[in-house]
Image 1 (cartoon, helix red, strand yellow):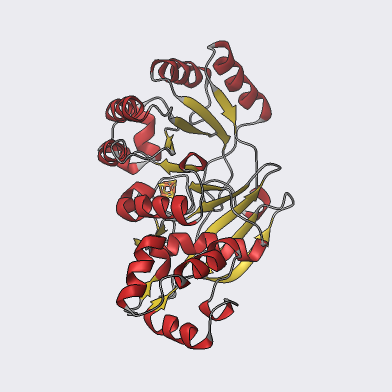
Image 2 (cartoon, rainbow, N blue to C red; image 1 turned 120 degrees about the vertical axis):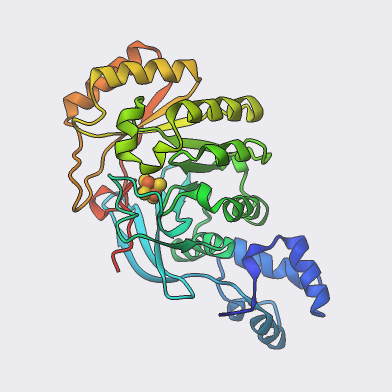
Length: 339
Ligand code: SF4
């Protein structure tokens, strides 16, 4: 296993300290940071303004740990899915989502996922390991280089349950904020609902958006969709969300995958609306994207509209997610390691 220091797991001040220890001039750290984070360089060898000897020294002490792009698939709407190979040969996926006003990336946090949601493609091949901080940052750097643009928003909604890789996820948020100069308000962490970690995150002093994959207002339904819902009951989750809101003053988004015949009834909509008002949540409706080998289906247009009308009549704050990447399996819940 590589014992080199993972460069992108550290802030500028920390790298400056490491440079001092390794007898590298401190000012070089800023030059290298400028190249990596602002000019989309992904190798020490490609940095123009440092001497060859220093490049050799950097390569002998540090690794940038940037995943290798194995495959790129682009949707009609330019949403682009990247298949990435990690240093140990495992593969993950991430998605670039271009909008008129922002360049967003959806990153993975684990190789596979241990949660095993019944509707999701990401856990089909099981769970292997957590991603390192540098592997989370590496997804952004690899994509920035490929698109030759700065990423402006980061969503932790790719493969894996971010809160089950808590320390590395929180550390990567700090690195994105400081090294990529991206406000925490532009970062969203989506969780299937791990009560103890939501409570911990509430005290982490982060200004991010937390998105909870609620998917149904009923505990009975939820345990069929999300196995970990047995230990993380809706009642406990809602208490944790209230605590999060009280401590952070940040309104939580409830993600709601609308699935035909499962959670798209009028009764579901009414109960959801009442809960959302009570807990001051914002609802994000996501019509289900079909996944190969899964029995779930997307509701038809009329069912989606009816659900929408019930929420509207209850004056709930909600939105319907803009569809992106569906024809390239790059949409929510569709990421998987197909290799
Ligand atoms: S939906 Fe999220 S938490 Fe559930 S299995 Fe898929 S990646 Fe894991």
